[in-house]
Structure formats: C-alpha cells, structure tokens
Length: 275
Image 1 (cartoon, rainbow, N blue to C red):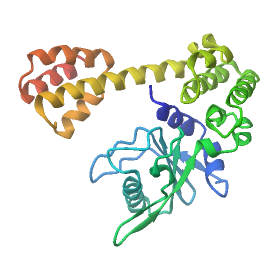
Image 2 (image 1 turned 180 degrees about the horizontal axis):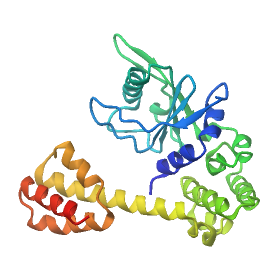
Image 3 (image 1 turned 135 degrees about the vertical axis):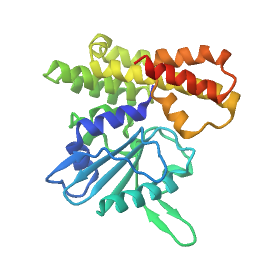
C-alpha cells in the first residue's frame, strides 16, 4: 500500500488547506492541475500540482529517501517543464514522511557546474503537531509529527477523528490516518484507537486498498517481463501499468506461453478487445 498516494489524495481533496500550509500567503483561487509534462514521460504518482492565481505549487511526497532519478535532479526537471508550459513561478516542496538520517532529506538544492536550483524540504518528524491536530485536512499527517510521546499523540488524533460530525468524512479521515500512522505505529495499537469498522466503510479506503494491490501486481509482472525480455519499450510498460489486478494476474500466467515481445503485444491487444 502506498503511503505517498494517501497524501496525494489528501492534497487534491483539500488543496486550499495544503496551500495555506505550504505557501507564505493564502491564494484567492486554487485548483488541482492535471498536466502532461511532455518531452519524456515522467511518473507523477505521488506528485500534486496546485495552480493559484499567479504560481504553481508542486508538492511531492516521499516515503523513501532514494529514488531512481535523484530527487534534486527531478525537482529541477519538474521546475523547468512547469515554467516552460505555464510561464509562472513555481514553488516546490518535498515532504518526507518517515524519519531517516539520509543526507537526501537534508538536501534542498540541485547543484552542478552551471546550475543552482533550490526547493523546500519538510521533514514530518520535525513538524509541530498542533498545526495538524487542528486541521481536518492535515489531521491524518499528525501521527508523523514531532512528539515526546507518540502514543499520546495518536490517542489525541483518534479523539479528534471521533469528533468529526459527518460520518462519511469521519470514515475517510480515519482511513487516511490509519494508513499513515502505519509508518510509525504497530497496526494492532492503531486499531485499538481507530475503529476498523468505520474505516472499512470508507469508499476511499477501499479504493486505496485496490490501488495498492494493483501496484503490487504490476511490479511483480514487470519483474517477470524484464527477466524475460530485458528493458521494455515505454509504450508497452504503460499498457501493462493500466491493467486491472485481474488482468495482471492473467498476464503472469500467460507469460509461460509468451516467448517474444510480439506475443506480449498480441496478448495486450486481446485485453483491449475484451473491454
């Protein structure tokens, strides 16, 4: 299950709250920006772009400090593409969710011989919990914040969740909180404080669970495909990426009879025809 994806869902559901947290001045207008940054495809699974009246807020959530493309270089890449496409200033914030001593989480710039690009880094374990406890949109992040007593903090979070009047909102916030608290607490302890029944009723919780299963199935199939064929063309990778869990499981079984990439293309075409 992706902790990063939960944060992306939160930021896109409550953009005003995240902008108020991350920008020095609260914007008058804000919308979630769905954008294709061409040149080369770049995966933006855990990236949110919020467009205000005069700038773009780029938020990137990270559980791991390492990535295939180094984070500083990736931030430069995003910044250049966004400025080229929208011609407005870009504020970039990388939010690290899980405590680590890695040098990456203390790096806030990309430097080479000709370029010095800066961005902002937030380490959740250093943040004051009060801001998050008092804001419904940020409440699920509160278990990751600074505290001398993590257990007391989670207890306070659960009390604040219980106070939410609207049942559907309470279900969703409880589900988000349960998932993110898993970065810091044992699951059994979390379930003592947060009602599992309430979370299971959450439509969004079920959606996150399904996305987690799909990502696991995709990763498994890609390992098999890379072992069989080496690096695949990006267009084929994208066609595999969007398959459902059931079809990914079918692909895993079909690989026993797929010996060439042409056979893979034929199999994928069959799945398209079955839609």
